[in-house]
Length: 138
Image (cartoon, rainbow, N blue to C red; front, side, top):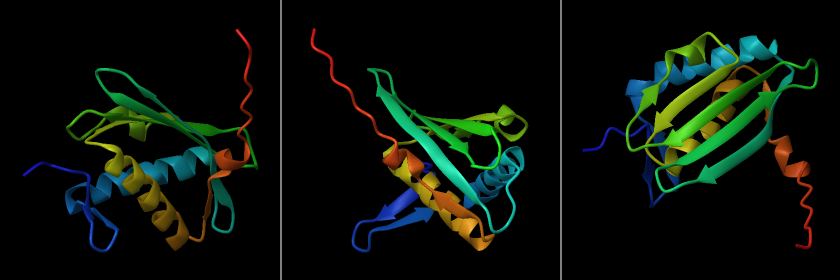
């Protein structure tokens, strides 16, 4: 069986965390809270979520911030068919996780939301309100 970060139950629509990785994800969210200097009653925002598809992999870039200061945390998620947390993710303003597929990407966002909600920190996906697509003629 594959070592997945998250599994899904198609019948119920649930995304289920592999308990083996709970501690690492909790540590990562705690680092993000610390970097952003967020307290209970405030919010963390997902400012940007972009991804790039290449023949080798799909790479996602998530930028977290808040509206109280200019601190940000950039998390790169690379779909690579194995799970690995780079250690600098826990001591820096940037992090990197290699994960299996897009189910893991969605699972991480869901996990972050749940973890923050338990600490009375609001999680806002504000990148949805910032889309400004401009088309140019060539």
